[in-house]
Image (cartoon, rainbow, N blue to C red):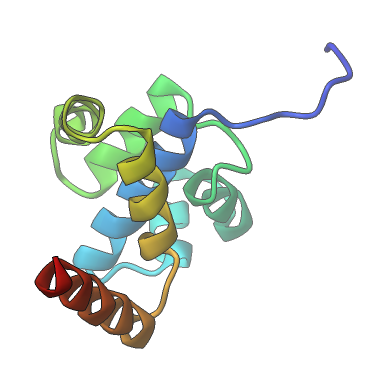
Amino acid sequence: MSGRPFKPSEIDVYIGQIVANWRNKFGMRQKDLARKIGVTFQQLQKYETAGNRISASRLFQIAQAMEMPVSTLFGEVERYNAVYDQTMRDIIRCLCQMNDADKKMILNIIRRLNVAK
């Protein structure tokens, strides 16, 4: 161990968000998914917030628990890297952390800015 604290990469953050998004789409609670993959809900929470990096084997277990191919999760990363530049990734990361009301407010602001041009 190097003694340095873990610093997640952008992909660690993004993969955690993908897992959380899919879990929510399936209506699963963290506790339910955690039980299916054999970890505590706190550990799953760390995965989803990039507090801990998700290993390939654990990501495979997550995909199995949600009955989806693991390639679905990696396909999102490929799309993420290909389509968005750093600024767009920062904007998307911030939006993902907002509540629905704030997202709508930001969308209205963006629409007004586009009309003003």
